[in-house]
Length: 637
Image 1 (cartoon, one colour):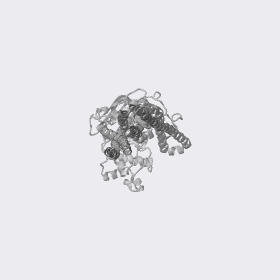
Image 2 (cartoon, rainbow, N blue to C red):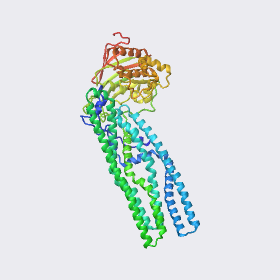
Image 3 (cartoon, one colour):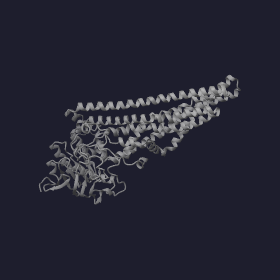
């Protein structure tokens, strides 16, 4: 596992209210909080900017420790290449001077031959430097991208509900790609510049101490002073650009997701205005970043010219008054002129590296986000479901429970929208529930009463603040998380459709399912008429979260997934909320026919669904009470 798992303290995050049940995510995100666009969609900007540059670069360097040998090869190749370029120029100059001065042929010929050999080596050495640098960089980026995905998986779903999707996409794509500048164009150039500075300065000092002094001062100005001068202004501009880009991406995605509601509610014009404002903010930040980088280029180009002027003047003075041989002065000047490329790349890091550091801060801020639930990787591994029980279960946002940190973060789907943690009452109070094998239990209740939160807790998407949850008689936190979610499965009212075929979307719960099993599941979920309308049927590729499917059709895909699942306990959160009564009845009939000893916990408020339950529970104000009517076969007890 990468170093991020062992470095960095838990950040203090900014609370961002989430929509309650039935609220439109897109509109909530577009209109912002109290009509103002939040300073950071994902709440990580403040934490990211608090990281010092030394901390960020240290954490980035730790990521490459397993590939240190590759980096050493890049440094050796790069140093040899830059020195060969300088020395080939010096030897060629000395050889040409020797020809005009009538030096022995063997002397000037040897100098020219060696210069040619060094020149020919320059290309392969430069290629080797880039090859090793990018081999290391792309390997590290692969590992970081995997770590980011693992981090997002550990944060899901509770912590990711408050993350802006645009910001997450920016982190996964642009931010991680920008880290390539550090790994491929920063570490080895720094070492190469340091080594070549020392070697070249010694060579020039051997010709004349004064020339060595001028060279050292010029090199240090380039590789030390210029980056320090330009770092602060360029970092601020780069950080503003990265944040503005992430916020714009989130706003675009949310406006696209909620486009129908925005048009229907007359909010399209306001959304357009916000998009224009966010775009202007991003372009303004990008412009400031460009100006800062422009000044860096001006300084970087000016210092070598000034240094070369001083070097030439010093060489001329030494040749005229201090007894320095004119040919030596000319050779030194030629070598000094050719020695700048290694230092110039470092000088530009003051501006070029700042977007990378800003991106790295955002990546590490995501790494440092504490998950709502820490996965159990070595606990009990039950193979089947036998019972579920909650005892005096409590969950809320004002009790400061660290496992879920609800008081520090955001309400769940059941919390009233627009309320702060201090204003929100506990979501669940003293909930007692038992479910036996083969039992169908239905829960009804108003929106915001805690039904969805209860399912989150039973799936261990969140940690309870009090009471107990036991599965198969075992405390839920002692069960290996992967095993828990293999014996329990959930169908939510919001179904996500992956960019894949219908068949593979249905088979996500059981990828090894046979074609016939998938066809049977689709048939039992009443997807036949939908498949008939799609070219290719089950092999039709769905895109953009199944945009060509209606909400009800997406829910039927979720039901088909459930039919393929081997889980003995199914938690169904409004599985038919977007279906008409006739289709809902058919789906419920299909669920019951596929029960085969499974236990169902169904969140629903429609009588047709409630009538099929063995027990009906009512959730009100975070508590459960049992109704006396309910059947397993449609008959009243």
